[in-house]
Image (cartoon, rainbow, N blue to C red):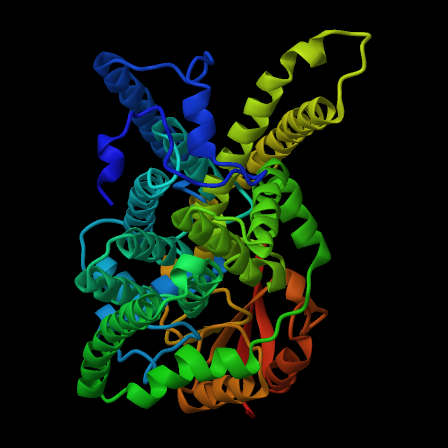
Length: 540
């Protein structure tokens, strides 16, 4: 894995380009082309300084731009549960949501630090995103040039902070992406200890989000595809592959064993398994939001065109039996398989973050290939009115499409981003605080309005504070309201019609169980600009 340190920094490692050719060989053959100069040591240092300066400016700029955003509904849930854990509550036994424990435990640690927990949690997330960007560069250096890898790292930062994908909130995805990148880099080392460390990284990742199992499937598929090559169809390769996969499994299971011991000491093993895996796998089925997916694809269009072209061409090469650089192949598999959660999600938003490292690397690879082809055909493209040949027309068309979609997508992102940053967390706090002023005791914030708990001293009125996406969860919440004798319920004004709470949006059928209960047992007593407060009736 250290061979690339010895290589000329301007050449890439051996791999296949989107067209199936050897990129490393092509770059060395074209070293006289102006965009692939032979760099001196001073130029390399200056180049790295430009990269680091651009990287840091973008990371800090985006962080400051989004730092005071109103709470994302998932983020508010995670912080609320973290605060309750820090106050002595037991996760899953006293308060729960349908996520593994990592994001809640980290939130609890945030609440034990001085300062605004929302700001601290977000700053920590931005730092993790920054480290992930550097790991993208490290991973890219295994199959492409330094400049290409650095470009992918910068592109990853930009993608992570695009307004539609929620990478600027305290969510599980940025932490999972970090663990996946650590695992991907470690996977390139040939020792069994490194392979076991891959398992440990995946074990830590699955404590934040269950999608890590898809990455494990990617690793297994990667080992299987390599059997297509004749030199890999040996007993030794099969034995070594099985040994390496087992080493990854041992690292993963060892991490899980430690976690289970900790959970057992708190008596919440069964509850953790139920809320982390059983409940979301058996009951969490979202509708498909066509508008959300259209917006996601429009936002990423130039990147998806480039990365998709590389993915398709690499797939064709694999099917034909052509040799593809193995590290590059792994990134292609990552991009394809880890895009599945976003494609299947209700609006394809923050679940796209899982695939961003791979998509950034493939997009830069595709851009370089298209640019190189355009340079090769520049004479034909400039000799008008002579009609260029098919290769020149295709390469010119690709560059034109990418540039035009980049301009349109960039303008759209700027416009959408301006709408997103138009509000701030103080406005949200100013709307919540007057609604609950003077009200004592626990309160239930209907339909995932957990910012109530983050911005005030109000205690959650239910043990499960996430979305009602199953009948069991609706009954669970109603039992909590009864058991805790919750006097007040806070509802957004757009979810109130007349004097009744209405069930709308996703899972409206399951929500109606709760709204029927609320309408039978509570009545509105306070109206503010954004909220309606319901109080339990005396006869309930």
